[in-house]
Amino acid sequence: SSQCRRSIKSCSGTPNIVRVGLGLCAFHVKRYDDAVQCFRRALDVDEHDVLARLALFTALMQQRKLVDASEVVVKLKDMMPSAVVLQRFADVTFFGAVHKGTVARECDAILTLIRTSRRALTMPKDKLAIAYSRFQEGRVLQAMGRIDEAKSLYQAALEGNRSLVAAK
Image (tube, rainbow, N blue to C red; front, side, top):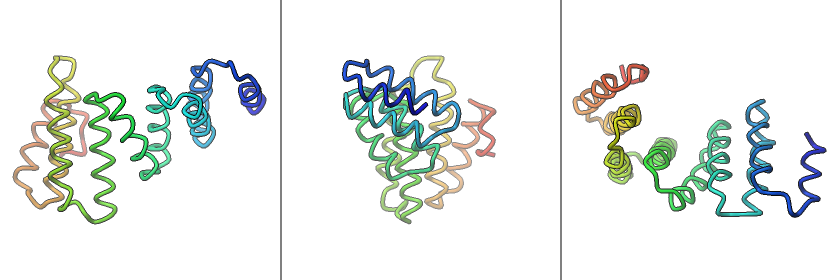
């Protein structure tokens, strides 16, 4: 609520997790602008707050604000270079390239991101993330006109995760 936000602003000693928590609550009730505001405030207080940055990225993606989300994920990738963050970064980069019409020019960099993230996924619990990375790679190859290679990757993605219906 606005009273909670005013209280947090007036209390300089409030732990940052409270700001992030308010943002997560706002996100949960689909008040995305409020969520973004909370996450940005948390980052104003502590620019190295990984949870605030990850939550901000998620909220911006929900709002389809790709330019803002791409700025956030670039910083997040440097702060927390995990396979999942690299996958999200590859998604944002791909969709940005589609929007700008530059997929052909950016495809090598996007494919490198996707393949790098997949190499980091080595545990059996990573099966779904590996399937998603195959889907990502297929999507880029399809955009480049390499349909047969894309089909093969889509099939491998479906074998790893039947819920990737878009790969059919």
